[in-house]
Length: 570
Image 1 (cartoon, rainbow, N blue to C red):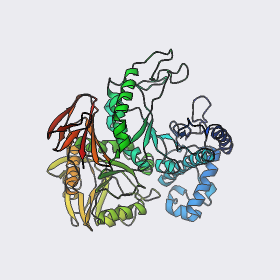
Image 2 (cartoon, rainbow, N blue to C red; image 1 turned 180 degrees about the vertical axis):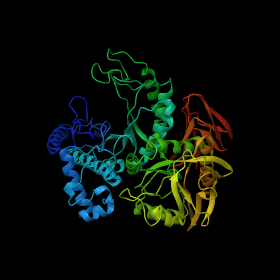
Image 3 (tube, one colour; image 1 turned 90 degrees about the vertical axis):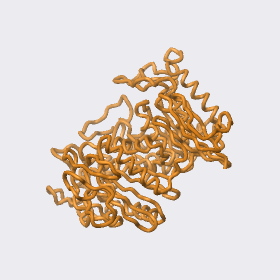
Image 4 (cartoon, one colour; image 1 turned 120 degrees about the vertical axis):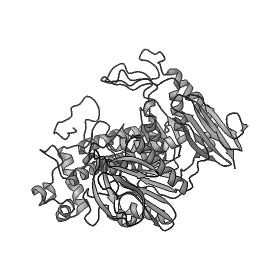
């Protein structure tokens, strides 16, 4: 059984109460998987395999004896000798020096805090082991079936999704985002579109109207929102848009969960919206089959390793997904089409790269980003990027390690600015600065943002350095509040213009654009997501795809939760 950080053994009765590293469980899981694959693998009606269900949804790291033994073996393979581990982790602090790998504890409950290296490495160990289990299951299935294999993940779960999907055939995810959290929904689609490049993803679970369990329920979607969700997903690269669940459960812990039909067989409040989704799916199908999502020119890097670092070291309560979504919302507000990409992704075709909130940048990533910059790209690094090593330790040569050397800046101080009444100015905007911040000397490079008042007054918090045919921009602090959002948007617009990012069409707030490319035309799908109607500004020589009518340049309305497709023939 799974054992949590406090030593509590999970009981049978819900799900994910088992330790997936346990040898007996692995043996029995393999037997069941093989039996299913043998029986079903060649049936014509089987179009894909879904491994398990939502790995690490309800549980994080396991602290059982099996995991302890596996942990020690993982450390031996990673560090080779105990001396190398002691040096990397700095275990002399508080008598943590280890004489053997077997002495190293799991980071269970302790009076104060465990070493940062110990905590983060245990999370990464867990990421690798669950990906290993998925790989093992997939290998069994492939012995009997040729259809693709996936797993329904999402960014809330304790997973390394790049590692998980490396051995699977297509990406899929679950989300129950409500209208007020639509930006989170966009971000997930923009991420999962890029996990398996040029391979359609699936939205494996979403609600017809609302999610619920015995303990709580969400507000039902307004009529029309589900249709808008589906249009965005399909336009962004989804091949499947699926509901949890078909028929309301009669028993169990989710008897209140929204569904297509009720437990007594009648249509639910979301039923008509499901029919509307099917109508627009059929309407869009010719477009979807003859085109694919266009690669964006702007990339924002997502990192599950960074999430693990912030779980260990949240500074002042930082939640990685939440703070990254807030940054991402600035692109939505500006109507700039963007990709969310993993650290492992190639940078070919991008012009503008953002790496916010990534404490550790590997040498491989820095070399890849360096080549991107030298070939003409603009890289905006920060805030909270580069200040930790691969072992979750502090650099001792300079504050930001290899990133600082590459950017040719000098860090003077790293410290929190929250609550210090420190204000910075950039792009003609003054805003309060916050978070754990990096303050730069003003001597090297161009000072784009300067601290005008408070801690570090007179020094720089945004630096720009030319390198090759491109630039590295260091964002050392997060501007706060409404003025801070304006400053971040000004930064994005400034470098988007410099990078010649295509912004040929613009929409009002609450309406989003997804471009697709076919053999002889591009298509811009505009969908209203806030239910308040919106507008799209269209240049000349464009067609309305649905009506096949030529459009004059100007502004066109997008009705609430509706969509338009603007076509441009090459």
